[in-house]
Length: 626
Ligand code: SF4
Image 1 (cartoon, rainbow, N blue to C red):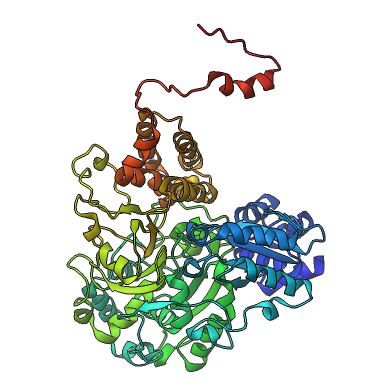
Image 2 (cartoon, rainbow, N blue to C red):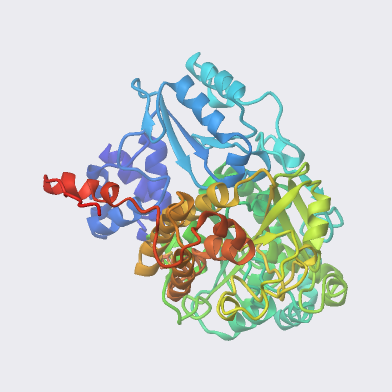
């Protein structure tokens, strides 16, 4: 085995920075990485055993214990629960004769829960040894496991037909569906492959390109909304031996799957955007960070890059422009939501734990391997291609004054038409609900768990409250008729995740608790606030849901939600949002649970509460009831 491990490290030039690739290859080879392998890696890569262990232990899809022949990762996001995950889970357990977080006795099947895998429009879904299975039902599970037990391969056990669009491409052949419901400037066919890089780039200087992107007022589509042209201008100004363009394709926010669709249907548009960004900023190295859950696209995307190299759109003197040298490599992640944060993503690209860095310095000054680095997301980069093709003025005809252009929405949950909708900024919640064919709607989660749980009933308690002085989940929240609230940077900013809940759903027990579990699971653990408070807040919520809460508990939640904002990165800063947002817009649900008494808990059971302590110290507390 040692020889094989050394073969793998040498394939990556014994480069410590390629530790993620090396670990992925070792997992492909034997399913896990053990202490002996780690020792070899430490020696060969010149890093400590502790450093290798740090990386191995951080990522969801790495393990130090032997795995099964078929490892089934069943998505446990809220959309999966809404669509019958419990029955599918039971079916897996029955068919595999194993329980979740364990293996079958014969070592054939391993069952694991996993965070959102980006298939919310076709949940319940699971990844089995890199193959994605969607729209699972107990019947399908039974058939699938039977086929595997009969000796069929995973590919043979997949459904007979592939998904729509390019999912049927022989190089992709997946059963995933795109579910594109509405296209505008990005999701349409008015684009000739590589036409901007092939024709327009050579006619414009880097300065012209930056100016056009600035004039378009394009803002980053990941949620934060930083002006793209300005980011590119900073990138151009800063000096460096190398400059890096990173495309962030690590969409891990539950309810988000737009990158999946863009990369399936328009990978050329995304890569072309990276080439344009490189030309504008003077970058020579491109990295696409692809979440592990989308590994099924890896070969398909690699072939697009190969085609670009053959056509002269990657490599040296791209499109005949002297000294414009740039190439792109795809780096797989290994399952960690926090890596969507740009500095955590850079750490991961360097083969380390995906822990966010302190800022400053910002990546544009010191990013990947300390080189100036510009990070843009999939949608942002694709948008720049259309802007250069049609012009900034054209782009400015879409959207609203402060939010120009279009936005890709990943719509899922309780609706008839889940899928991808490209809408103009300024579209209202009402319009989204109508487009998606949702009825009897109770609430809409905008922006995933870190965003806002919006009530579709008119609310009048928002303006001027004490809460509003500091609670700004992602932008400004204003008191207005909720149904008419608009998706925009000034009202409801969003990275694109929209989850609809009907009136049958228990928002606190089903939704908020699920979101809190997500944040607890995904915290990298660096900050004490983010490491502890989501857990404590969840306990407090549980107390309320158990009927033991008092009004003070709601106030405690609000006050702890304020403290958590000091966390280092966006994950911690927004980890209390499921609770804060639901208190803000659905306070009546909390009020129904808490007792009218404000100063003491009249359901508190003293005898029961000391039971555990009695057991621990081995004596019984005696109570005198008066
Ligand atoms: Fe890690 Fe949470 Fe701190 Fe972010 S806020 S650095 S995820 S502990």
